Image (tube, rainbow, N blue to C red; front, side, top):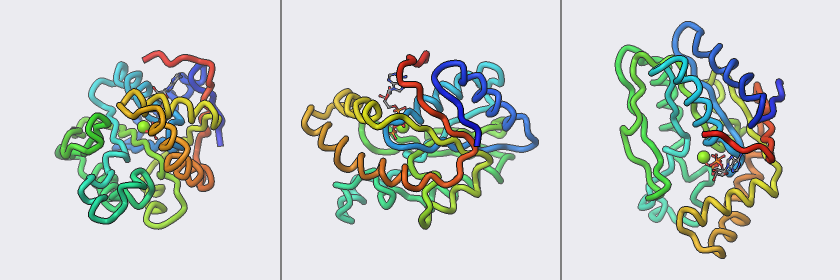
Length: 223
Ligand SMILES: Nc1ncnc2c1ncn2[C@@H]1O[C@H](COP(=O)(O)OP(=O)(O)OP(=O)(O)O)[C@@H](O)[C@H]1O
Ligand SMILES: [Mg+2]
């Protein structure tokens, strides 16, 4: 397993690995896993932007979080208080989409997108056009060693695990919660409650990543 530090000079190595996947015959899917607040979405955004500069229209991002069950379904099942836990996602739907992304390269495939502003997903919001050669997908549970999540790994060509030391990860998560409208107490309750439980699960079931991305907490991101 290769270890790479990011942000910083390791970023070029990550872009190189992702570009090599894109240049393989057919369409590749790269997974980015890690605990809540570790920086998966930030890395996926930065990586996708860099690759799109060199290969316009050939890379697209699809989030695992787009498979969050809708709030009304969570309410019906009494799962609203653990939103974000593995059982609050449509994992089978996610796996099916990964299959379709791999197999259906002769027509557009549409994926949902999670909108934090409304805490819900919008169907068919992301277009994966036939020209797309690399799909970057990121989420908490890509390497989870429990059914049905253990079906994800075989649908990915490569998986990177993003790790950030817990104290900084928690403070970034808390800041993001307040940014999206939670009061200080509610943000802390979420960060130290359900988010923390999910982080423990992710960190205790890291599967077998191809790359360990150690987040350099001192380096700013340049988006
Ligand atoms: N280098 C950085 N410096 C400061 N803040 C950062 C840096 N990288 C990411 N962040 C911030 O940390 C927070 C968490 O990052 P991000 O949203 O990418 O994590 P994530 O792993 O996708 O989390 P989740 O699993 O909850 O979706 C965000 O608010 C992001 O803007
Ligand atoms: Mg994210």
